[in-house]
Image 1 (cartoon, one colour):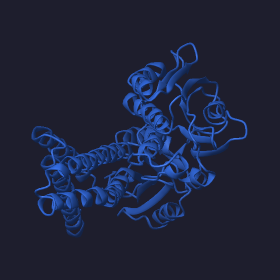
Image 2: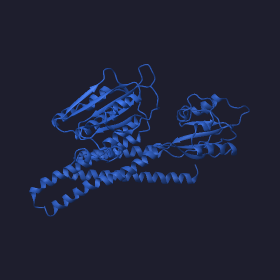
Image 3: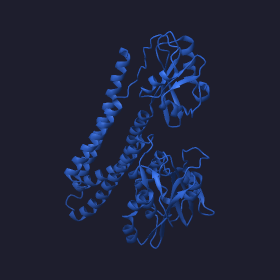
Image 4: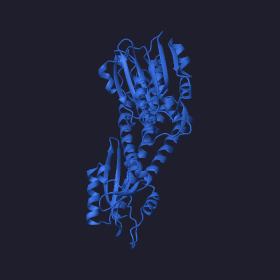
Length: 457
């Protein structure tokens, strides 16, 4: 690595360390203020600060190790052309996706990671232009073949709306092939965007409760200093504002955690009935207190799913909690779920069950269309006031609330549906809503089911 590269890496680490220190300091200041107002105890505040500092340190250490690499390989010239399997063995030893291209611009060797990313599907020596859609990368490959450049050329490749790779293209020594090594920049970009969004959203949403707290503290110290009768009312309002900040911080941290791991598919096999049962257990009593009947309708038989258990429990809790907010006394919430023969059928059952309803797909499933693999679906219906059509496209955005169309002022952070949307993206599933004004709203989710026992997931 050159001196300039080392200096750039050092500056990047310094900026990253400064960002994490600033984030932990802001979080500590909020906890200190909550401790002063009595919202949390000293031990809880100190424990929360330690957790935040530990998470920040873990993220810093993890991202600090992501530095530009120079994939230089000293390949000694041989009297014969190396066999294909020899190159494959060498590429398999690399921790990053890598492949080799011959002078005819055909992919002649690759490791397992590169095969998955390029979606080769067993193709034999395909032309690079048929599987690579980046003009910049194709141009770099062509230049490396023509000029025989030993120094690697770095090219950034946008392979999707939220996925970025850096490709290193080089012609090692007197080798007869061009080597391409890919580095996934998606986690770094997502972490930077999540940090930026967190600071912007937190500063915006925390301004109101912090201003209210500051105003009441100033009033209690000044004009109302001797008016002890008003203190109980002031303290009740301040307690409500601190609880709002606590919910907001918890939801923001949850959303940030989900986004940071969204590109990694879950691998655990779970029973969807158990997930729903654990998530709805506490809501039965809450619904009874509000005079709302919560009914769970499940298809018989096993419903296996490859999912992150805690995240899917959060999906169920958020949707049921959202339905409870907008239900009136005497109303009913119906949670239904089951197993379908395909993702298309699951989408219909989850989000297209009411005649004459307004519908919107908030997140299309990322699976390949036309596949017949089984899918799990879930639908949560309420009997609330419904949602006007103009609000539907923005459902799932951070901090967006359509309270005026859902029965007046409703408390919440505005992050519940955003969390559901990101969790379903993590599970390669879909998310939809349908509503009828004056009759109710239904949110549905669907995701790939686990394959039957004996088959590889």
